[in-house]
Image (cartoon, rainbow, N blue to C red; front, side, top):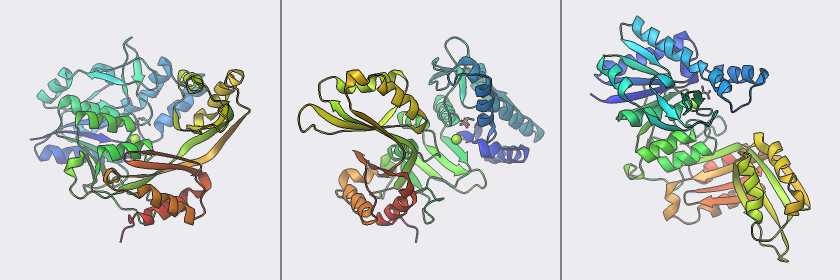
Length: 406
Ligand code: ASP
Ligand code: MG
């Protein structure tokens, strides 16, 4: 008997028929003799609708009341699944974050899980029930409901799996697994059987929307194996595992892209100690995440250009924040460009192979695509290019790295 946590995303619980299919998937594992705990998202589209309501009511994105509205989507689905299971003669009960409790910090709208008490869930198991846990929510230090940020039910599932010492954490979704590239753009993308935590982390943070980045971080930290798979069949998906579980590692495992980047260039910023802190400190204080940063060596020792990227949604705030300090920073111009995309090639095999970046630059060059910013890490090369070249770049790179399906 294994203990399994199954997580189902919004499209997998989109209506009663789909929820009944989820109940059947739960039953399949129970029939194998396994113990199952389920973690759910809200029905597809519901959280967006709730965000709309709260915003129209004047709600700030990061407030206790906003969270109390947003968290209701999952309350509906957990109750419905427990009902469907009961209908099938399977004892089950729903659990809200505060009832378990799933304790988080007090950062509303993007709370982090700090601890999960397992007594109640263990008791639920001991009583022969299938516990159905509301994802995406927890309880803050002041006793208020918190939410974990969009896509947060993945993180809930991994955290619950780790807390319960689950052998498997199956993430059921509407795609077959993790692909070498977005199959909607690259027609001959392949499903990967296995991918390492590190690669998955890069893929997730680069916009491959299969898993929330934080969920992957948590899985990596706790060594929790994940299985990303479709809720439409029992076909195997992609295992997210430790590097040494992968026997034949490709040099490049996937090509990812993120359209949610906007570029800001400060022209002729003063070149003196403390200047970077003076720019990025206020952005951090405004909770604006900065992604890529490039600064040139100044030719005259006085001033240099500095380029960085932020999320598109943060662009206006970032521009205002930096412009408010124009006198202090001494730049002559601020250029903002939302029409950019970050394209990345990812693979742990890069650590031991040279020439990966070169192939990327060559391939883009041959297609006449200009590179605006480059950044690299041990297992990734990213470039920022004009957004209109997204498709062309992805397809060309997919072929260049030999990832195309036969
Ligand atoms: N329902 C939440 C959202 O749409 C959490 C999730 O689906 O993971 O972001
Ligand atoms: Mg999701």
